[in-house]
Length: 209
Image 1 (cartoon, rainbow, N blue to C red):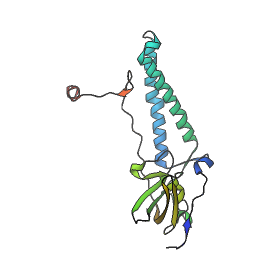
Image 2: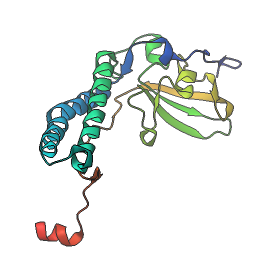
Image 3: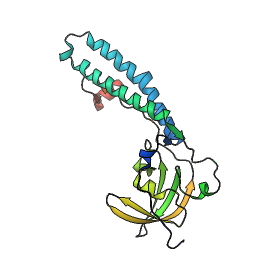
Image 4: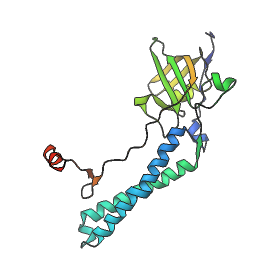
């Protein structure tokens, strides 16, 4: 271990200083899949309901119409967001060949095994802000922990500045491998009148099957 070598992350927040949206191949596919679903499936279906509901009397008293219009605004807002994120995307493949420090130090796409002062070990993968998934131990490169690991190598000690306090961590291993981002899943179809997913009772499900 390189005794006395302790990295302290810079104070500035990377996300605020960079316009590019760093993301893994799996992450960009997830965004594209969601955008495609919204444009080709979800939005056309809601537009159809809006048109149908508009012909059913007083719009101010029409729950279907009011809900569908709100839903349409939500979809359009999400579409604008996704388009901006995809346009700004800088795709970084963790499996791409690396040489020199790029292969031994932690940068975007690295998987880091580390230990805290008590010796408890944990493994995290550094991903984009649109890919964070704590259940999969995927952390953002712009998070306090992600910033602390940037440029760190095996046996380095890094200082984590988090809301709960300051902690010194020891990097045990830095590696680059495929990061499996959870794919986009089509959400359950909502009940237009309430906006809540339809629930089918066991009796109804049996009769339908």
